[in-house]
Amino acid sequence: MICAAVWLAPSSALAVPKMDVKVFLGVGSTTFVPRVPEIDLYFGDPIAYQGTVGGRNPSTFVNWDVGLAARVRQRKLFGEIGIVFSQFRFRIGDQLALIAEAQGEPIDERLLGQTARMNSLDFPITAGYIPYANPYFKLFLYGGLVNKFNLKGFVDLGGRRALKFRPKDIPGFPLVIYQAGARLGVAFDLGPFNFDFNYTIGMNSITKTEFRTNSHVFQFNLGWLF
Image 1 (spheres, rainbow, N blue to C red):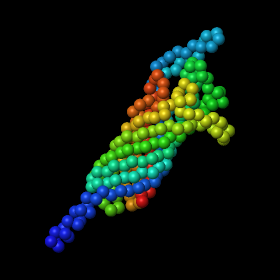
Image 2 (cartoon, helix red, strand yellow):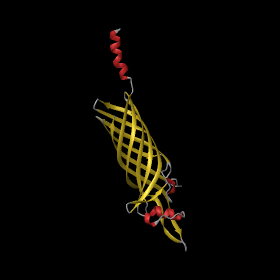
Image 3 (cartoon, rainbow, N blue to C red):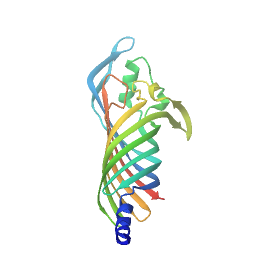
Image 4 (tube, one colour):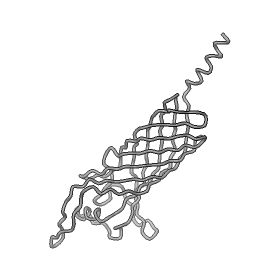
C-alpha cells in the first residue's frame, strides 16, 4: 500500500492544470486595404470632374497595446483569455476627403494629411499546443478569435486634441464598433518573461461602408509572468 501511494502521487500532480497570469505591452503594425470600386467623381456648381477614387490602396501605421491575460496549461495543451487596450492609427488623406465630399460630408481642411488615432478594447480567446517545455523555456503555437471593440478616436493639431469622434462618425470612412479577427501566433516563455509574436486578419470589414476594408495586424508583445 505504501508503494502504491508513492507511485500515484507524482502521476496525480502531473494531471493538475497549471495557470499563469501575465501583464504585457507591445508594438506592431496595422494595415488597412480598402477595396473601393474605381469611380470618377463629378460634383460642384457647375458640375466638374474632381478625381477618381477606388482600387486597393493599402496603408500601414504603427500600433501599440497593453493588457492582462490568464493562461491554463494541461500537459501539451493550453488555453488563454485576455483583455487588451490598444490603439491604431490611420491617415486622413486625399482619397478619403474625396469620398466624404461626394457623400455630402466634407472633411475640415485642417485635418487633411493628419493622422487619426483610434482607441480599442480587445478580448482575445486562443488555444494551442506546447511542442517543447522545460523548467526554464516553453514554446507555444496557437490560434484563436480576437473580439475588437472600437471605442473613440481623436486627431491632434498643434500638439492638442483638436477633434474627438466615435468610430461611426468619420465622414466617408466610418469604422465598425465590433470586428472579429482570426489570430495565429507563436510565443515562448524564458524564465518569468513571455515573448509573443502574432498576426490577426479581420474577419469582417473594419469600415461600415458599401465597400470592404480588410485589416491586417502584426504584433509583438513582451510580458511578465506571475
